[in-house]
Image (cartoon, rainbow, N blue to C red; front, top):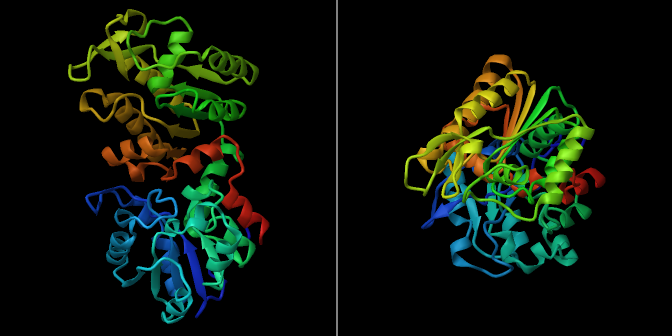
Length: 396
Protein backbone atom coordinates (compact mmCIF):
# COMPACT_ATOMS: atom_id res chain seq x y z
CA UNK A 1 0.00 0.00 0.00
CA UNK A 2 2.07 2.88 -1.33
CA UNK A 3 -0.32 5.55 -0.12
CA UNK A 4 0.29 4.86 3.56
CA UNK A 5 1.08 7.61 6.01
CA UNK A 6 4.83 7.40 6.58
CA UNK A 7 7.90 9.19 7.86
CA UNK A 8 8.69 10.72 4.43
CA UNK A 9 5.54 12.83 4.12
CA UNK A 10 6.07 16.53 4.84
CA UNK A 11 3.10 17.59 6.94
CA UNK A 12 4.29 20.63 8.90
CA UNK A 13 1.46 23.16 9.04
CA UNK A 14 -0.79 20.93 6.93
CA UNK A 15 -4.36 20.33 8.06
CA UNK A 16 -4.85 16.57 8.31
CA UNK A 17 -8.41 15.24 8.43
CA UNK A 18 -8.07 12.02 10.41
CA UNK A 19 -11.03 9.62 10.26
CA UNK A 20 -10.97 7.25 13.23
CA UNK A 21 -13.53 5.01 14.91
CA UNK A 22 -14.21 6.13 18.46
CA UNK A 23 -17.51 4.27 18.71
CA UNK A 24 -16.67 2.92 22.16
CA UNK A 25 -19.10 1.32 24.65
CA UNK A 26 -20.48 3.82 27.15
CA UNK A 27 -22.67 3.54 30.24
CA UNK A 28 -24.22 6.62 31.88
CA UNK A 29 -21.81 8.89 30.02
CA UNK A 30 -18.71 6.90 31.10
CA UNK A 31 -16.50 4.96 28.67
CA UNK A 32 -16.39 1.29 29.67
CA UNK A 33 -13.79 0.00 27.17
CA UNK A 34 -11.01 2.03 25.55
CA UNK A 35 -9.15 -0.30 23.14
CA UNK A 36 -10.44 1.55 20.04
CA UNK A 37 -9.12 4.86 21.43
CA UNK A 38 -5.75 3.34 22.31
CA UNK A 39 -5.31 1.86 18.83
CA UNK A 40 -5.31 5.27 17.09
CA UNK A 41 -2.62 6.79 19.32
CA UNK A 42 0.40 5.78 17.12
CA UNK A 43 -1.07 7.62 14.10
CA UNK A 44 -1.87 10.72 16.17
CA UNK A 45 1.64 10.73 17.69
CA UNK A 46 3.21 10.51 14.22
CA UNK A 47 1.10 13.49 13.07
CA UNK A 48 2.04 15.49 16.20
CA UNK A 49 5.72 14.70 15.57
CA UNK A 50 5.31 15.97 12.00
CA UNK A 51 3.75 19.23 13.31
CA UNK A 52 0.50 18.73 11.42
CA UNK A 53 -2.77 20.35 12.40
CA UNK A 54 -4.89 17.32 13.34
CA UNK A 55 -8.65 17.44 12.79
CA UNK A 56 -10.38 14.30 14.07
CA UNK A 57 -13.54 13.05 12.37
CA UNK A 58 -15.43 10.26 14.12
CA UNK A 59 -18.83 9.05 15.25
CA UNK A 60 -20.61 7.23 18.05
CA UNK A 61 -23.90 5.37 17.66
CA UNK A 62 -26.48 5.87 14.92
CA UNK A 63 -27.99 9.33 15.33
CA UNK A 64 -29.31 9.28 11.72
CA UNK A 65 -28.36 12.87 10.86
CA UNK A 66 -29.87 14.36 14.04
CA UNK A 67 -28.11 15.97 17.01
CA UNK A 68 -28.55 13.62 19.98
CA UNK A 69 -27.09 14.80 23.30
CA UNK A 70 -26.13 11.34 24.57
CA UNK A 71 -24.10 10.73 21.39
CA UNK A 72 -21.70 13.63 21.70
CA UNK A 73 -17.98 12.89 21.26
CA UNK A 74 -17.06 15.35 24.04
CA UNK A 75 -16.41 12.69 26.76
CA UNK A 76 -14.29 10.77 24.23
CA UNK A 77 -12.24 13.88 23.43
CA UNK A 78 -11.48 14.19 27.16
CA UNK A 79 -10.46 10.52 27.37
CA UNK A 80 -8.19 10.87 24.33
CA UNK A 81 -6.66 13.98 25.86
CA UNK A 82 -5.80 12.09 29.07
CA UNK A 83 -4.34 9.12 27.14
CA UNK A 84 -2.17 11.44 25.03
CA UNK A 85 -1.41 13.74 27.94
CA UNK A 86 -2.15 16.60 25.55
CA UNK A 87 -5.05 19.00 25.06
CA UNK A 88 -7.69 17.94 22.54
CA UNK A 89 -9.78 20.95 21.51
CA UNK A 90 -13.41 19.97 21.09
CA UNK A 91 -15.58 21.70 18.51
CA UNK A 92 -19.13 21.47 19.86
CA UNK A 93 -20.86 22.63 16.67
CA UNK A 94 -21.88 20.47 13.75
CA UNK A 95 -19.99 21.38 10.57
CA UNK A 96 -21.06 24.86 9.38
CA UNK A 97 -19.67 27.97 7.63
CA UNK A 98 -17.49 28.82 10.66
CA UNK A 99 -15.81 25.41 10.97
CA UNK A 100 -13.03 26.21 8.48
CA UNK A 101 -11.97 29.40 10.27
CA UNK A 102 -12.01 27.54 13.62
CA UNK A 103 -9.84 24.77 12.16
CA UNK A 104 -7.43 27.31 10.64
CA UNK A 105 -6.81 28.87 14.07
CA UNK A 106 -5.25 25.74 15.59
CA UNK A 107 -1.47 25.66 15.87
CA UNK A 108 0.92 23.12 14.37
CA UNK A 109 1.03 19.82 16.29
CA UNK A 110 -2.31 20.43 17.99
CA UNK A 111 -5.56 18.47 17.81
CA UNK A 112 -9.19 19.46 17.29
CA UNK A 113 -11.97 16.88 17.45
CA UNK A 114 -15.13 17.73 15.53
CA UNK A 115 -18.53 16.73 16.89
CA UNK A 116 -20.10 13.38 15.87
CA UNK A 117 -19.88 13.32 12.06
CA UNK A 118 -23.13 11.32 11.92
CA UNK A 119 -25.04 14.33 13.32
CA UNK A 120 -24.78 15.58 9.70
CA UNK A 121 -27.38 14.05 7.40
CA UNK A 122 -24.95 13.98 4.45
CA UNK A 123 -22.56 11.56 6.21
CA UNK A 124 -24.49 8.27 5.98
CA UNK A 125 -26.03 9.28 2.64
CA UNK A 126 -22.48 9.67 1.26
CA UNK A 127 -23.72 12.99 -0.09
CA UNK A 128 -21.46 14.54 -2.74
CA UNK A 129 -21.86 18.12 -1.46
CA UNK A 130 -21.20 17.10 2.14
CA UNK A 131 -18.12 15.11 1.05
CA UNK A 132 -16.78 18.23 -0.71
CA UNK A 133 -17.63 20.38 2.30
CA UNK A 134 -15.61 18.22 4.71
CA UNK A 135 -12.73 17.85 2.22
CA UNK A 136 -12.43 21.68 2.18
CA UNK A 137 -11.55 21.61 5.89
CA UNK A 138 -8.17 19.96 5.31
CA UNK A 139 -5.16 19.57 3.04
CA UNK A 140 -4.92 15.79 3.26
CA UNK A 141 -7.16 12.98 4.49
CA UNK A 142 -6.08 9.93 6.50
CA UNK A 143 -8.37 6.95 7.09
CA UNK A 144 -7.39 5.06 10.25
CA UNK A 145 -10.82 3.50 10.81
CA UNK A 146 -10.83 -0.02 9.38
CA UNK A 147 -13.93 -0.81 11.43
CA UNK A 148 -16.08 1.61 9.39
CA UNK A 149 -14.40 0.97 6.05
CA UNK A 150 -17.24 -1.32 4.97
CA UNK A 151 -19.51 1.76 4.96
CA UNK A 152 -19.94 3.97 1.87
CA UNK A 153 -20.15 7.14 4.00
CA UNK A 154 -18.95 10.66 3.20
CA UNK A 155 -16.07 10.68 5.71
CA UNK A 156 -14.96 7.18 4.65
CA UNK A 157 -15.47 6.97 0.90
CA UNK A 158 -16.90 10.20 -0.57
CA UNK A 159 -14.18 12.51 0.77
CA UNK A 160 -11.36 10.62 -1.01
CA UNK A 161 -12.54 11.93 -4.39
CA UNK A 162 -11.67 15.54 -3.48
CA UNK A 163 -8.48 15.45 -1.42
CA UNK A 164 -5.13 13.56 -1.34
CA UNK A 165 -5.90 10.48 0.79
CA UNK A 166 -3.80 8.03 2.79
CA UNK A 167 -4.03 4.92 4.97
CA UNK A 168 -3.23 5.42 8.69
CA UNK A 169 -0.92 3.13 10.70
CA UNK A 170 -3.67 1.18 12.45
CA UNK A 171 -5.68 0.43 9.28
CA UNK A 172 -2.43 -0.69 7.56
CA UNK A 173 -1.69 -3.15 10.39
CA UNK A 174 -5.24 -4.47 10.18
CA UNK A 175 -5.16 -5.02 6.40
CA UNK A 176 -1.70 -6.63 6.55
CA UNK A 177 -2.83 -9.05 9.30
CA UNK A 178 -5.94 -10.05 7.34
CA UNK A 179 -3.96 -10.39 4.10
CA UNK A 180 -1.62 -12.82 5.86
CA UNK A 181 -4.62 -14.92 6.78
CA UNK A 182 -6.47 -14.77 3.46
CA UNK A 183 -3.80 -14.55 0.78
CA UNK A 184 -0.27 -14.89 2.17
CA UNK A 185 -1.12 -18.01 4.14
CA UNK A 186 1.35 -20.06 6.16
CA UNK A 187 -0.25 -23.51 6.28
CA UNK A 188 -1.58 -25.52 8.04
CA UNK A 189 -4.21 -22.91 8.81
CA UNK A 190 -7.16 -23.31 11.19
CA UNK A 191 -10.38 -21.33 11.61
CA UNK A 192 -12.25 -21.55 14.91
CA UNK A 193 -15.67 -20.07 14.34
CA UNK A 194 -18.51 -19.67 16.82
CA UNK A 195 -21.47 -17.45 17.53
CA UNK A 196 -25.16 -18.16 17.47
CA UNK A 197 -26.07 -18.28 13.77
CA UNK A 198 -24.52 -20.28 10.98
CA UNK A 199 -26.55 -18.28 8.42
CA UNK A 200 -24.65 -15.07 9.27
CA UNK A 201 -21.24 -16.79 8.91
CA UNK A 202 -21.88 -19.06 5.90
CA UNK A 203 -20.14 -16.66 3.47
CA UNK A 204 -17.02 -16.58 5.65
CA UNK A 205 -16.96 -20.38 5.91
CA UNK A 206 -17.43 -20.83 2.16
CA UNK A 207 -14.77 -18.24 1.33
CA UNK A 208 -12.19 -19.65 3.76
CA UNK A 209 -12.91 -23.37 3.25
CA UNK A 210 -11.03 -23.14 -0.09
CA UNK A 211 -7.88 -21.86 1.62
CA UNK A 212 -7.93 -23.39 5.11
CA UNK A 213 -6.99 -26.90 6.32
CA UNK A 214 -9.30 -27.01 9.36
CA UNK A 215 -12.56 -25.37 10.36
CA UNK A 216 -13.64 -25.92 13.97
CA UNK A 217 -17.28 -24.99 14.56
CA UNK A 218 -18.35 -24.17 18.14
CA UNK A 219 -21.11 -22.22 19.94
CA UNK A 220 -24.70 -22.06 18.71
CA UNK A 221 -23.50 -22.66 15.14
CA UNK A 222 -22.21 -26.10 16.18
CA UNK A 223 -25.66 -27.01 17.56
CA UNK A 224 -27.17 -26.34 14.13
CA UNK A 225 -24.48 -28.48 12.44
CA UNK A 226 -24.97 -31.29 14.99
CA UNK A 227 -28.76 -31.27 14.71
CA UNK A 228 -28.67 -31.43 10.93
CA UNK A 229 -26.17 -34.27 10.98
CA UNK A 230 -28.35 -36.40 13.25
CA UNK A 231 -27.26 -35.54 16.82
CA UNK A 232 -29.69 -34.70 19.62
CA UNK A 233 -29.20 -31.19 21.01
CA UNK A 234 -32.16 -30.96 23.42
CA UNK A 235 -33.51 -27.42 23.79
CA UNK A 236 -30.23 -25.74 22.76
CA UNK A 237 -30.07 -22.53 20.74
CA UNK A 238 -30.24 -23.61 17.11
CA UNK A 239 -31.31 -22.47 13.63
CA UNK A 240 -33.88 -24.45 11.67
CA UNK A 241 -34.18 -24.72 7.87
CA UNK A 242 -30.43 -24.77 7.39
CA UNK A 243 -30.20 -28.11 5.55
CA UNK A 244 -28.96 -26.47 2.34
CA UNK A 245 -26.30 -24.43 4.20
CA UNK A 246 -24.98 -27.49 6.07
CA UNK A 247 -24.99 -29.52 2.84
CA UNK A 248 -23.02 -26.73 1.11
CA UNK A 249 -20.41 -26.65 3.93
CA UNK A 250 -19.98 -30.43 3.94
CA UNK A 251 -19.75 -30.67 0.13
CA UNK A 252 -17.21 -27.83 -0.02
CA UNK A 253 -15.14 -29.34 2.76
CA UNK A 254 -14.77 -32.54 0.73
CA UNK A 255 -14.15 -30.62 -2.50
CA UNK A 256 -11.40 -28.44 -1.01
CA UNK A 257 -10.01 -31.02 1.43
CA UNK A 258 -10.76 -28.92 4.53
CA UNK A 259 -11.56 -30.88 7.70
CA UNK A 260 -14.69 -29.76 9.60
CA UNK A 261 -14.66 -30.42 13.37
CA UNK A 262 -17.71 -30.15 15.63
CA UNK A 263 -17.95 -30.80 19.40
CA UNK A 264 -17.88 -34.47 20.47
CA UNK A 265 -18.78 -33.65 24.07
CA UNK A 266 -20.53 -30.67 25.66
CA UNK A 267 -21.53 -29.01 28.93
CA UNK A 268 -25.29 -29.14 29.37
CA UNK A 269 -27.75 -27.67 31.85
CA UNK A 270 -31.52 -27.49 32.20
CA UNK A 271 -31.31 -23.73 32.72
CA UNK A 272 -28.78 -20.90 32.83
CA UNK A 273 -28.49 -20.94 36.65
CA UNK A 274 -27.57 -24.58 37.31
CA UNK A 275 -24.02 -25.86 37.19
CA UNK A 276 -23.33 -27.66 33.92
CA UNK A 277 -22.77 -31.39 33.44
CA UNK A 278 -20.31 -32.80 30.88
CA UNK A 279 -21.81 -35.30 28.44
CA UNK A 280 -20.93 -36.96 25.17
CA UNK A 281 -22.98 -35.42 22.39
CA UNK A 282 -25.15 -38.55 21.94
CA UNK A 283 -26.21 -38.43 25.63
CA UNK A 284 -27.90 -34.99 25.55
CA UNK A 285 -31.50 -35.17 26.87
CA UNK A 286 -34.51 -33.35 25.43
CA UNK A 287 -34.82 -31.02 28.45
CA UNK A 288 -31.13 -29.97 28.39
CA UNK A 289 -29.33 -27.22 26.54
CA UNK A 290 -25.73 -27.10 25.37
CA UNK A 291 -23.92 -24.12 26.91
CA UNK A 292 -20.23 -24.94 26.37
CA UNK A 293 -17.85 -27.48 24.84
CA UNK A 294 -16.52 -30.44 26.83
CA UNK A 295 -12.99 -31.60 27.71
CA UNK A 296 -12.63 -34.10 24.80
CA UNK A 297 -13.51 -31.35 22.35
CA UNK A 298 -10.97 -29.03 24.00
CA UNK A 299 -8.30 -31.76 23.64
CA UNK A 300 -9.24 -32.20 19.99
CA UNK A 301 -8.94 -28.41 19.39
CA UNK A 302 -5.59 -28.44 21.21
CA UNK A 303 -4.30 -31.17 18.84
CA UNK A 304 -5.42 -29.26 15.74
CA UNK A 305 -3.84 -25.99 16.94
CA UNK A 306 -0.63 -27.87 17.85
CA UNK A 307 -0.30 -28.78 14.16
CA UNK A 308 -1.20 -25.31 12.80
CA UNK A 309 1.00 -22.40 11.74
CA UNK A 310 -1.83 -19.89 11.45
CA UNK A 311 -5.04 -19.58 13.51
CA UNK A 312 -8.03 -17.32 13.01
CA UNK A 313 -10.60 -17.14 15.80
CA UNK A 314 -14.04 -15.58 15.52
CA UNK A 315 -16.80 -16.34 18.00
CA UNK A 316 -16.92 -17.88 21.51
CA UNK A 317 -17.31 -21.59 22.28
CA UNK A 318 -20.32 -21.15 24.54
CA UNK A 319 -22.15 -18.89 26.96
CA UNK A 320 -18.87 -17.46 28.28
CA UNK A 321 -20.51 -14.43 29.94
CA UNK A 322 -21.61 -16.85 32.70
CA UNK A 323 -18.54 -18.12 34.64
CA UNK A 324 -20.12 -21.60 34.81
CA UNK A 325 -19.94 -21.92 31.02
CA UNK A 326 -16.77 -20.00 30.20
CA UNK A 327 -14.27 -22.86 30.33
CA UNK A 328 -14.31 -23.74 26.59
CA UNK A 329 -13.76 -20.16 25.43
CA UNK A 330 -11.10 -19.59 28.12
CA UNK A 331 -9.26 -22.80 27.21
CA UNK A 332 -9.25 -21.99 23.45
CA UNK A 333 -7.81 -18.59 24.34
CA UNK A 334 -5.11 -20.14 26.51
CA UNK A 335 -4.17 -22.74 23.86
CA UNK A 336 -3.82 -20.12 21.09
CA UNK A 337 -2.01 -17.67 23.41
CA UNK A 338 0.49 -20.32 24.54
CA UNK A 339 1.15 -21.50 20.99
CA UNK A 340 1.58 -17.89 19.77
CA UNK A 341 4.11 -17.12 22.51
CA UNK A 342 6.05 -20.42 22.34
CA UNK A 343 5.97 -21.36 18.69
CA UNK A 344 5.44 -17.93 17.16
CA UNK A 345 2.37 -19.00 15.18
CA UNK A 346 0.44 -16.22 13.45
CA UNK A 347 -2.84 -15.77 15.36
CA UNK A 348 -5.64 -13.34 14.59
CA UNK A 349 -8.87 -12.85 16.54
CA UNK A 350 -11.76 -10.55 15.82
CA UNK A 351 -15.46 -9.78 16.14
CA UNK A 352 -17.32 -8.14 19.02
CA UNK A 353 -17.94 -11.14 21.29
CA UNK A 354 -14.44 -12.51 20.65
CA UNK A 355 -12.82 -9.24 21.70
CA UNK A 356 -15.09 -9.16 24.78
CA UNK A 357 -13.87 -12.66 25.73
CA UNK A 358 -10.22 -11.72 25.13
CA UNK A 359 -10.63 -8.64 27.33
CA UNK A 360 -12.46 -10.64 30.01
CA UNK A 361 -9.54 -13.06 30.31
CA UNK A 362 -6.91 -10.33 29.76
CA UNK A 363 -5.31 -11.97 26.73
CA UNK A 364 -5.20 -8.99 24.33
CA UNK A 365 -1.38 -9.18 24.11
CA UNK A 366 -1.33 -12.94 23.53
CA UNK A 367 -2.41 -12.80 19.88
CA UNK A 368 -0.37 -11.65 16.90
CA UNK A 369 -3.28 -9.34 16.03
CA UNK A 370 -6.68 -8.57 17.58
CA UNK A 371 -9.17 -6.80 15.36
CA UNK A 372 -11.61 -4.48 17.12
CA UNK A 373 -13.61 -4.16 13.89
CA UNK A 374 -16.90 -6.02 13.77
CA UNK A 375 -18.74 -5.84 10.43
CA UNK A 376 -15.67 -4.76 8.41
CA UNK A 377 -13.64 -7.68 9.78
CA UNK A 378 -16.37 -10.17 8.87
CA UNK A 379 -16.99 -8.68 5.40
CA UNK A 380 -13.28 -8.75 4.62
CA UNK A 381 -13.20 -12.45 5.56
CA UNK A 382 -16.19 -13.04 3.28
CA UNK A 383 -13.97 -11.80 0.45
CA UNK A 384 -15.85 -8.53 -0.07
CA UNK A 385 -14.14 -5.36 -1.28
CA UNK A 386 -14.61 -2.69 1.39
CA UNK A 387 -15.62 0.76 0.01
CA UNK A 388 -13.23 2.68 2.31
CA UNK A 389 -10.24 0.52 1.30
CA UNK A 390 -11.15 0.55 -2.39
CA UNK A 391 -11.47 4.34 -2.37
CA UNK A 392 -7.99 4.78 -0.91
CA UNK A 393 -6.46 2.28 -3.32
CA UNK A 394 -8.08 3.95 -6.34
CA UNK A 395 -7.56 7.59 -5.46
CA UNK A 396 -3.80 7.54 -5.00
